[in-house]
Image (cartoon, rainbow, N blue to C red):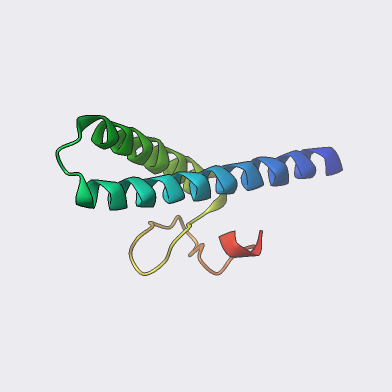
Length: 90
């Protein structure tokens, strides 16, 4: 049982790390595109990163609960936001 819990924790941590990495890349590409709006390759990369990020966030929330509050993430019943650990507590 402990091995299963450890695996679940490790997978959750891996997903959170990838979400953070993709968010960083998306912000950096967004800033670059603000000053280079006509460059096609960075825009294509931005859209690819955003697609992966949205997919990964959806998968995470289906498995572990909401990442955000205040209307940015839906919740299953019962209200999941108060369940711990919260993403930043991981």
